[in-house]
Length: 492
Image (cartoon, rainbow, N blue to C red; front, side, top):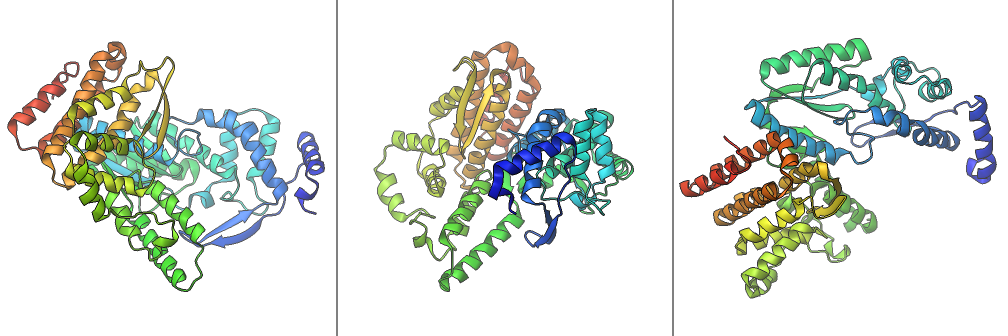
């Protein structure tokens, strides 16, 4: 009998079993998935999945999640892949300031979910929690009859248990190895350290800790290398000023487009499914420097007329008829609107056109940045939207994070201007950023600003070297230097 056929009756029965301790887990069903690689998936009957979901909300979220460190990003509300990527970018900028030419350790675990030791996982739970009923139920959910290693990847509880398992590694890295710049998303983690010698030493220590304490092995692809190579993490290639979409993501999308075109020619394509897939892909790449990538890839689609006539490239009519009839002020106004919203792919394409044909108004940029950063606009929290659809509610004491989020986005535009070789626009835009931050610093609460002095120094240094790299005018370089020096006595 299906659980859903008598839902209320079965739920009452399930509650009694849980209360009396007589609940027994059902039998797993196995099947394989082949994307992105072949994996065995085990699923439980519906009644057991109900228990797993209840367990997460009753025990895991209130009891386990609060012990995770700040730089653990999986299975935590308000964090995730994009949070992890932003943190890596922020730490790269800080490490560059503190260490100079630093080293990256990029590591992950070999066959992670399949090699977790259930006995060690239970010992970790017992270390943090003493509730017997909680531990008894946890044991039933963790152990699978006849299996002495691994936890089923499809169970709702498994991702939380897996995150807890590596919480031991988090504590070791942060408290024993004293690594300041460390970010983890599930079994993928990044460390930024002073030099090659330190990187090699830490690599060996982490490898030994995993084998001895958690019975895990590092993936052979784990490595350490100079930071200038960038960091491949959570679907992006991250650099200290920008991030790109991973090559694997691009290859997978090309494969999909080829298959879609083939099915379209055979009149056997689900266009609604394609729309959802494209929307998901755009949602991923919009967080990277991907203006050309979108138009190049989506232009390969042979059935654009079936997708509600969405424009995947900028028409010549827009260049000739629209831009030529706008005043400079109107262009600047549109430019700022496009920066704040990303309703569909054409807005980014139009932005590329706009910067080619417009002169950027420094004062307007400075004003908009100041308004976004000013922590006095609201009494309790500040709600704002940055390009790409990021929505944040940031409390006053986190106002520096707002600055970082905003600058991440502005660095994307700076790189676009650099790519288009528009020095005058690049110069005015960067100076607008400097002025906006300077105004923010002088008009904000000075006490709170001093808390972030080291972080401001990192930003100042990055902006200055960005400027110096692209602008060859000595007077403009001096102008930037003097502006940054005004940030509460910043010195190079």
